[in-house]
Length: 317
Image (cartoon, rainbow, N blue to C red):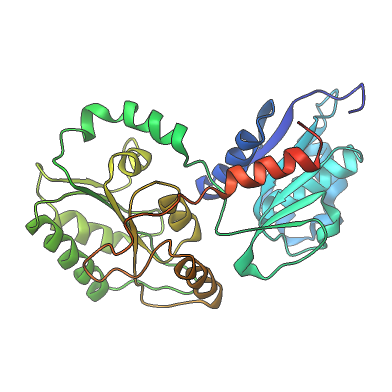
């Protein structure tokens, strides 16, 4: 490390939980000192290529820095602007890009990309699913944080994680009614439900789900308002049902140690199909048909694997 560098890594954050948690999870798995830096850029920057504006971004993001960080990590296309700017500002520090930035991968030191994206390169680290922060420690902390509110629910408890629309999926009322029927079948079996929607769940369907679960004693429904119990749900669940519209949500569910099954969605993309096929072949999960058929499996912990690999490659041991 250059004597003028700090020993602290910089983690770019853009305010979206799905991307921020990936870079945060990775730097924690790398076990290095780190700090977070907001990726606040004008919207018009994203109309131009990251290479074209890297010098302007460098001044805006890092102009106040007196010393370069030890390295920098970011997730997604937006972060690539910051990572290229960091390379412009500090040519010798390592830059770690998470997700395919859809530009020349050689612009980065290493790129961590889900294997279903079919991206290859000498500096590419392929992952099964996405990176994240769900691990034994975060689940332990969530159990402590949510003990008062969630532990009274009778076992077995099922976390039902519901996503929403994307470019492949469009939810409709018939689909939601089917999910509600599946949930009522679990209630009839004496199970408790922890149901959560996402920011992508259409409002009209969120309202339909809220109205469907008036059971105060055996259903905890989170509609996106107030403190988010998501990690608590995963920590206290004996089983997980997760919709098949989000690689992040499925990866996080599989990072627990409990049985996970997938709820089919109205729509399907090729990348999603490749991802789920890989999970099925490894015996990690299956399509839900009223039962959890896979009751024993190893948790999916790609973040820890990539973190250790980067420690080795960057000689951080």
